[in-house]
Image 1 (tube, one colour):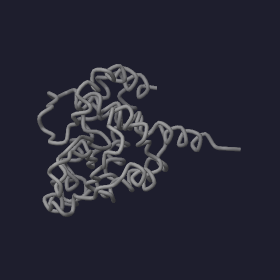
Image 2: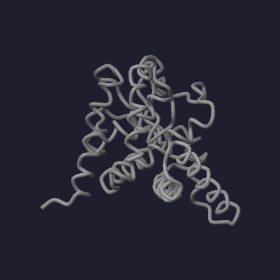
Image 3: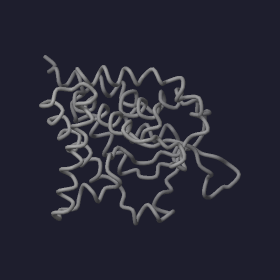
Length: 230
């Protein structure tokens, strides 16, 4: 007999981008990944898609991986902040604290798989063009074909996967982490981001194809809140 956790995990894989990716993308919030368009760096005549690592509530991976006392205290403050946001969104205080720690644990795993700031500044280390088929084969637990359709990405557009290692790690986490963990993380992402102004100008990778996507998918916001409270 299949365990409930296995059934939950399988369900998340079918709807992987629908929760951690799609919901937050619809709100202009950085979630599991950033997705947009960019000029092909080696062919200025064409525009391609771009998939970029995400998933972190703190500014970058170093905030999660450094072991000095200052960094540890900063993470404690981050957990307290997330817990407060969850509590304001309706979670009981005890559950809010527990869920905030769950969020930090998941984000730490994502951070450990993330590219360093030094490597991000190297254009050769963030240029990995792939076809949709190849990207889907490398990350089978992320529903890229469905996501591209929802984003109205034209057929045949190449994808520059800035950080292939990150996406492979995220794909594994989608398979291994319980659905409840992803729901908690999605709630934390939305509530924490709603506590500060959402900037649509901060990302150079916002898609020309998702200009109206945020409006069409805004209804998913309510779903995110209702699901994460359960």
